Amino acid sequence: MCQYYISSSELVCVSLVKVRDHSYKFISAKPFAPNLGAEIYGVDLSKPISEEQLSDISQAFLDHQVLFFKNQKEIPPDVHIAFGKRFGELHAHPAAPTMKGYPEIFEIHADKNSKIANGEFWHSDVSCDEEPPLGTMLQIHIAPLCGGDTMFSDMYAAYDALSDPIKKLINGLVLHMNLSIYTGAVMPIEAWMTKGLFSQRLFTLLLGHTLKREEKRYL
Image (cartoon, rainbow, N blue to C red):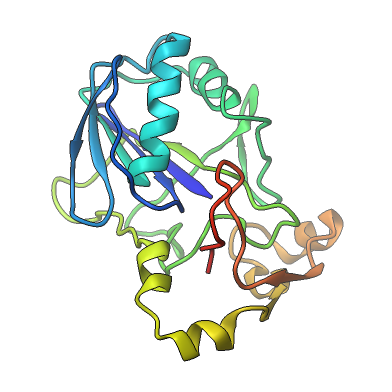
């Protein structure tokens, strides 16, 4: 699971994998925090990138979990989508309003009069799906001068810090996900019913990452 956040100056990418150090030949990476995160330089995401750059980005994504792509221009929707597809088949959010002409893109609008704002609580995007997506890409056009920062958590470090008895307790536990709790939040209840979004699903508490073969660390 990961998230991407793109603005006129940076892209943020989040993954749930353990941090490791690698050298990169086609990008530059500057560690952002001790546990996770790196600033990425030397790549322009407003146009197609090379396979070598993609390989370095993919490795940095696994190494640092959160990537801040600095000094970026506005990324056109078609380039945005094409970049996402290079990581795999794109996921369609089950209850999100999409951009006209670009159904792969979920549009978010919020101001001081908005009743809700996306991501107000700790979460992993669309964790209610049978197979949660690898990542989410968000291009931000308007941001506050200060505040409003997104917070990220290293779930590998959180799990590793647990005591052995607690790890033993949660291994094998199953989560019950019920989408109906979001009724009316991003679309009217009638639309949820039409789309059949009241399904309930069960998940193992600890899940593996699609790009890693390591011990499970998804919580």
